[in-house]
Image (cartoon, rainbow, N blue to C red):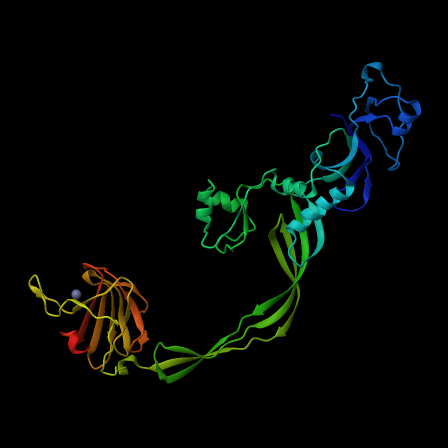
Length: 419
Ligand SMILES: [Zn+2]
């Protein structure tokens, strides 16, 4: 393969054509087409070693030196073509068919890293990146998109993964033979805690050929947080909180300057901002009524819609008596609180397993044990019929059931007398 580096080196990022001065290269040239036509011979090759060459123009004609016989060779039928290579620190990375394609590669790389809707203020590279016009037989021409992909990823076959619903980084890493750290390193632009469905992740660490710094300006609208005001009320119990008036975010227009290195934001500076609308405070009402004054209605609803006793109150339990009633139901069956009250315990307690205790005032207390899940916490005010837990078999339980107790001044009562 013969390569001719022409006298032109085109700047990669500017549209202007740059003339290279003191461009020391080993130059493989061939006779100009005009000369060939004139003398009617085939293609000839010659090696010209250039020292400090000052090119005076783009369309420069060269002096043809007498050819040493040994270097003169009949060319094959293969004709060399004009093409454009992109060189990084003097090393050719890709070859494009036209100057326009080479420029498009540069534009598309910047666009790849550009924030949507931003204005690019400045582009710079850590490397020296040039478009060089060359002549070559059988050049390995790439499409613009393949060239962009190769320069950005460092590989001809980048592998990616599109995030699906329910995916987590760990799963994606394992599925693709990577560990989580490698996956994070390969995706500096992605926030591992907030994977969005449809995000395209790189499966192998990128080794980009160029490191591009982009300075952008962007106009955005941002929310302004609202404050919260509290109003006390004795119509609610202590710990109860209700929204009286929902808060509203304000909005401001912001002009920012962002500096990105290969797509990763390294600095953000607010240039100017203007408030479009002020936020509106949220108003909350906060209860003050003491929980000790909370008294239930005295009439109970059923804790579950279907009641099936699997062990009665007072049944003998190896020397002791059963303090409640066991009501069988499938796992996950909703458990409702039987009267208004306040939650005084919600947690795991020995043989009871997960248990909720609700105080209804007047010395009355109900207990709900062996729960699978609990949806209340200590201090919560509950209304008759609210779901507080689901049926499970936590603690010492055989089979799924609710162990339900009613106590009056601490003394267990037969719950069935209340239902
Ligand atoms: Zn029981």
